[in-house]
Image (cartoon, helix red, strand yellow):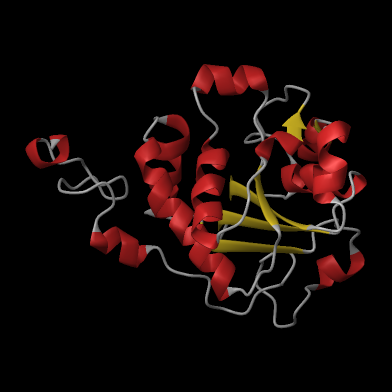
Length: 224
Protein backbone atom coordinates (compact mmCIF):
# COMPACT_ATOMS: atom_id res chain seq x y z
CA UNK A 1 0.00 0.00 0.00
CA UNK A 2 2.82 2.40 0.84
CA UNK A 3 4.48 1.63 -2.50
CA UNK A 4 1.26 2.60 -4.27
CA UNK A 5 1.01 5.86 -2.37
CA UNK A 6 4.73 6.65 -2.34
CA UNK A 7 6.43 4.74 -5.19
CA UNK A 8 10.07 3.92 -4.30
CA UNK A 9 12.98 5.16 -6.36
CA UNK A 10 14.92 2.63 -8.39
CA UNK A 11 18.17 1.72 -6.62
CA UNK A 12 19.93 1.61 -9.98
CA UNK A 13 18.88 4.78 -11.79
CA UNK A 14 16.92 6.73 -9.19
CA UNK A 15 13.74 6.95 -11.24
CA UNK A 16 10.48 6.75 -9.34
CA UNK A 17 8.20 3.78 -9.77
CA UNK A 18 9.91 0.68 -8.48
CA UNK A 19 12.72 -0.58 -6.28
CA UNK A 20 14.51 -1.97 -9.33
CA UNK A 21 13.06 -0.89 -12.65
CA UNK A 22 12.84 -3.16 -15.72
CA UNK A 23 15.45 -1.07 -17.54
CA UNK A 24 18.02 -1.58 -14.77
CA UNK A 25 17.21 -5.26 -14.50
CA UNK A 26 17.88 -5.55 -18.21
CA UNK A 27 21.09 -3.52 -17.90
CA UNK A 28 22.66 -5.89 -15.37
CA UNK A 29 24.42 -7.87 -18.03
CA UNK A 30 25.38 -11.48 -17.44
CA UNK A 31 29.00 -12.59 -17.74
CA UNK A 32 28.77 -13.93 -21.26
CA UNK A 33 32.39 -14.01 -22.34
CA UNK A 34 34.50 -17.08 -21.64
CA UNK A 35 35.89 -16.95 -18.13
CA UNK A 36 38.06 -18.96 -15.78
CA UNK A 37 36.00 -21.55 -13.93
CA UNK A 38 37.83 -20.82 -10.68
CA UNK A 39 38.29 -17.03 -10.47
CA UNK A 40 35.67 -15.84 -13.04
CA UNK A 41 38.19 -13.57 -14.77
CA UNK A 42 38.39 -13.49 -18.59
CA UNK A 43 40.23 -16.53 -19.93
CA UNK A 44 40.21 -18.45 -23.20
CA UNK A 45 40.81 -21.71 -21.35
CA UNK A 46 38.87 -23.32 -18.50
CA UNK A 47 41.50 -22.39 -15.90
CA UNK A 48 43.54 -19.22 -16.32
CA UNK A 49 47.32 -19.28 -15.97
CA UNK A 50 47.19 -17.85 -12.43
CA UNK A 51 44.71 -20.42 -11.14
CA UNK A 52 46.61 -23.32 -12.69
CA UNK A 53 49.68 -22.30 -10.69
CA UNK A 54 47.95 -21.20 -7.48
CA UNK A 55 47.00 -23.18 -4.40
CA UNK A 56 43.48 -21.74 -4.24
CA UNK A 57 41.15 -23.60 -1.91
CA UNK A 58 38.12 -22.60 -3.96
CA UNK A 59 36.79 -25.18 -6.36
CA UNK A 60 35.04 -22.53 -8.42
CA UNK A 61 34.12 -18.86 -8.35
CA UNK A 62 31.29 -17.43 -10.42
CA UNK A 63 29.61 -14.04 -10.51
CA UNK A 64 26.35 -12.60 -11.76
CA UNK A 65 27.91 -9.60 -13.50
CA UNK A 66 30.66 -7.01 -13.46
CA UNK A 67 30.81 -4.42 -10.68
CA UNK A 68 29.34 -1.69 -12.82
CA UNK A 69 26.19 0.40 -12.83
CA UNK A 70 23.40 -0.23 -12.12
CA UNK A 71 24.43 -3.31 -10.11
CA UNK A 72 27.04 -1.36 -8.17
CA UNK A 73 24.43 1.08 -6.85
CA UNK A 74 22.10 -1.79 -5.95
CA UNK A 75 24.83 -3.48 -3.89
CA UNK A 76 25.72 -0.22 -2.14
CA UNK A 77 22.06 0.49 -1.32
CA UNK A 78 21.69 -2.98 0.19
CA UNK A 79 25.01 -2.97 2.04
CA UNK A 80 25.32 0.57 3.34
CA UNK A 81 21.92 2.25 3.11
CA UNK A 82 19.71 -0.40 4.65
CA UNK A 83 17.60 -1.09 1.57
CA UNK A 84 17.14 -4.74 2.52
CA UNK A 85 14.15 -5.08 0.19
CA UNK A 86 16.67 -5.41 -2.63
CA UNK A 87 17.79 -8.78 -1.27
CA UNK A 88 15.01 -10.79 -3.01
CA UNK A 89 15.89 -9.28 -6.41
CA UNK A 90 19.62 -9.86 -6.00
CA UNK A 91 19.26 -13.24 -4.32
CA UNK A 92 17.22 -14.53 -7.24
CA UNK A 93 19.96 -13.32 -9.60
CA UNK A 94 22.44 -15.43 -7.65
CA UNK A 95 20.20 -18.49 -7.91
CA UNK A 96 19.82 -17.96 -11.66
CA UNK A 97 23.61 -17.69 -12.01
CA UNK A 98 24.02 -20.92 -10.00
CA UNK A 99 21.81 -22.74 -12.48
CA UNK A 100 23.38 -21.12 -15.52
CA UNK A 101 26.88 -22.16 -14.50
CA UNK A 102 25.71 -25.68 -13.55
CA UNK A 103 27.06 -25.45 -10.01
CA UNK A 104 26.24 -28.31 -7.65
CA UNK A 105 26.21 -27.79 -3.89
CA UNK A 106 24.69 -29.43 -0.83
CA UNK A 107 24.24 -26.34 1.33
CA UNK A 108 24.53 -22.55 1.20
CA UNK A 109 26.49 -20.34 3.61
CA UNK A 110 27.03 -16.59 3.71
CA UNK A 111 30.33 -14.90 4.46
CA UNK A 112 29.77 -13.94 8.11
CA UNK A 113 30.21 -10.51 9.66
CA UNK A 114 31.81 -10.07 13.04
CA UNK A 115 29.18 -9.81 15.77
CA UNK A 116 30.05 -6.17 16.50
CA UNK A 117 29.82 -5.15 12.83
CA UNK A 118 26.51 -6.97 12.38
CA UNK A 119 25.12 -5.31 15.50
CA UNK A 120 26.11 -1.88 14.19
CA UNK A 121 24.60 -2.50 10.76
CA UNK A 122 21.59 -4.43 12.04
CA UNK A 123 21.91 -7.25 9.50
CA UNK A 124 24.36 -9.22 7.38
CA UNK A 125 23.71 -8.35 3.74
CA UNK A 126 25.44 -11.54 2.54
CA UNK A 127 23.17 -13.65 4.72
CA UNK A 128 20.08 -11.96 3.29
CA UNK A 129 21.31 -12.79 -0.20
CA UNK A 130 22.21 -16.35 0.76
CA UNK A 131 18.82 -17.01 2.36
CA UNK A 132 16.98 -15.96 -0.80
CA UNK A 133 19.34 -17.95 -3.01
CA UNK A 134 19.00 -21.05 -0.80
CA UNK A 135 15.19 -20.88 -0.86
CA UNK A 136 15.20 -20.55 -4.64
CA UNK A 137 17.48 -23.59 -4.95
CA UNK A 138 15.81 -25.67 -2.25
CA UNK A 139 19.05 -26.00 -0.26
CA UNK A 140 19.64 -25.69 3.50
CA UNK A 141 21.49 -22.65 4.84
CA UNK A 142 22.90 -23.45 8.31
CA UNK A 143 24.77 -20.16 8.73
CA UNK A 144 25.78 -20.82 12.33
CA UNK A 145 28.37 -23.35 11.12
CA UNK A 146 30.76 -20.60 10.00
CA UNK A 147 31.63 -17.61 12.16
CA UNK A 148 33.97 -14.64 12.08
CA UNK A 149 35.93 -14.76 15.30
CA UNK A 150 38.08 -11.68 14.79
CA UNK A 151 37.06 -8.17 13.83
CA UNK A 152 39.00 -7.04 10.76
CA UNK A 153 39.68 -3.72 9.11
CA UNK A 154 37.62 -2.77 6.06
CA UNK A 155 39.14 -4.39 2.98
CA UNK A 156 38.33 -1.64 0.47
CA UNK A 157 41.55 0.38 0.80
CA UNK A 158 43.96 -2.52 1.37
CA UNK A 159 46.30 -4.10 -1.16
CA UNK A 160 45.94 -7.74 -2.14
CA UNK A 161 48.64 -8.90 0.29
CA UNK A 162 47.23 -6.71 3.07
CA UNK A 163 43.78 -8.20 2.49
CA UNK A 164 45.14 -11.72 2.91
CA UNK A 165 46.88 -10.78 6.15
CA UNK A 166 43.80 -8.91 7.34
CA UNK A 167 41.48 -11.95 7.16
CA UNK A 168 43.98 -14.70 7.99
CA UNK A 169 42.52 -16.76 10.82
CA UNK A 170 39.44 -14.56 11.04
CA UNK A 171 36.96 -17.40 10.38
CA UNK A 172 36.30 -20.76 11.98
CA UNK A 173 33.70 -23.52 11.99
CA UNK A 174 32.18 -24.61 15.28
CA UNK A 175 33.48 -28.20 15.79
CA UNK A 176 30.44 -29.43 17.69
CA UNK A 177 28.12 -28.38 14.87
CA UNK A 178 30.14 -28.54 11.68
CA UNK A 179 31.76 -31.96 11.44
CA UNK A 180 28.65 -34.05 10.84
CA UNK A 181 27.02 -31.44 8.59
CA UNK A 182 30.04 -30.52 6.46
CA UNK A 183 31.83 -33.84 6.06
CA UNK A 184 31.83 -34.86 2.43
CA UNK A 185 29.58 -31.95 1.41
CA UNK A 186 30.01 -29.22 -1.20
CA UNK A 187 29.38 -25.73 0.19
CA UNK A 188 28.14 -22.76 -1.83
CA UNK A 189 29.64 -19.62 -0.28
CA UNK A 190 27.77 -16.35 -0.94
CA UNK A 191 29.04 -12.75 -0.83
CA UNK A 192 28.28 -9.50 -2.61
CA UNK A 193 31.59 -8.62 -4.31
CA UNK A 194 34.86 -10.46 -4.85
CA UNK A 195 37.91 -8.26 -5.48
CA UNK A 196 41.00 -10.32 -4.65
CA UNK A 197 39.25 -13.38 -3.18
CA UNK A 198 41.06 -13.10 0.17
CA UNK A 199 37.89 -13.25 2.28
CA UNK A 200 36.43 -16.13 0.29
CA UNK A 201 39.71 -18.04 0.53
CA UNK A 202 39.85 -17.55 4.30
CA UNK A 203 36.29 -18.83 4.69
CA UNK A 204 36.99 -21.71 2.32
CA UNK A 205 40.05 -22.81 4.30
CA UNK A 206 38.02 -22.94 7.51
CA UNK A 207 35.28 -24.98 5.83
CA UNK A 208 37.70 -27.47 4.30
CA UNK A 209 39.52 -27.92 7.59
CA UNK A 210 36.14 -28.71 9.19
CA UNK A 211 35.51 -31.51 6.69
CA UNK A 212 33.83 -29.93 3.67
CA UNK A 213 34.58 -31.76 0.43
CA UNK A 214 34.56 -28.67 -1.81
CA UNK A 215 33.77 -24.98 -1.59
CA UNK A 216 32.25 -23.05 -4.46
CA UNK A 217 31.84 -19.29 -4.30
CA UNK A 218 29.09 -17.25 -5.93
CA UNK A 219 29.04 -13.46 -5.75
CA UNK A 220 26.97 -10.70 -7.29
CA UNK A 221 29.89 -8.90 -8.90
CA UNK A 222 33.58 -8.90 -9.71
CA UNK A 223 35.65 -5.93 -10.94
CA UNK A 224 35.64 -5.34 -14.67
